[in-house]
Length: 418
Image (tube, rainbow, N blue to C red; front, top):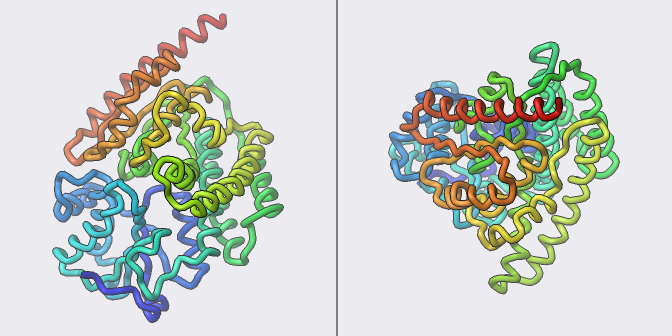
């Protein structure tokens, strides 16, 4: 078993964080730094990551587990770090998804690598796998929540500007600028709530709106799927960049929707299974407060002329009568609702990222395509499977076939307008 993370280790051990959503996790890293930890977001990619993952994780386990653990091991073996001065930080939901077991798979892999002296920290809200030197305090949770909100805003704005920018690279530079600004505000305990967030939202949206763009007709593509595969360039082979290189504008639903969905489930558990009354009340209160921040964020986007996503509650309403809200393993009903929400936003072309070994995702995605098309017959949906043996060329060819249909539909719309 791995060594516990002690209070003394907080001074000189670096917390290594696996990458999933670079913008969001860059801000979350700053939260840990501002609370006295040393932290670093892993950016190593390449074929050796999956080779290490396959070497130490059983072939039947879901693909994201192989990637997350492979990224850790590849980084540790790179020689960049003193392995006696690092700790590994990994999330643990405690739910029915196998992601709850990633930490045990990681511990097993560390034993096989003969590095089981490295502390492994479980990042969760349920008090599992306690470490004396690491405490997730309420103020840290608030700061992390704000980091995710800002991350969503920067991600959505950059995705809408980057394909049209006149000066290539300007959008990404502005993203980096604001990551530093927000991280600096966090260090001074600013930018979290109320007027401060309102002011920052307005400033961020107006700066992105001021980037020179050349608007052209582009195919609009939405990305849904299992949470890691949807957001991680390591997992989906740089899907967003590939789509933009093919002349598309990409929309990825906000990460906050998944967090709202997780909090929302407590209320449903009370109704379905008789879970704790006060837990349901508390979670409902938390969501209501969070929705006020969501409304503020979406308002700022709309006032600056951007295409804002649907609020979480409206996205949830799209699923009414299609998939029961009790279907909540993995992405559950939210995945189906996100497809409908994207179509209502004008993103009729949807890529559903399917990881190997994730049964709930396949049921709530592929299993619901027919139901989605009954609601929106013009939806152009393609599932793309990702696993260690999947051919990158075959994946791109399937996407190009979908884009050929999308371009044909776009041309028909132009002709109809004329």
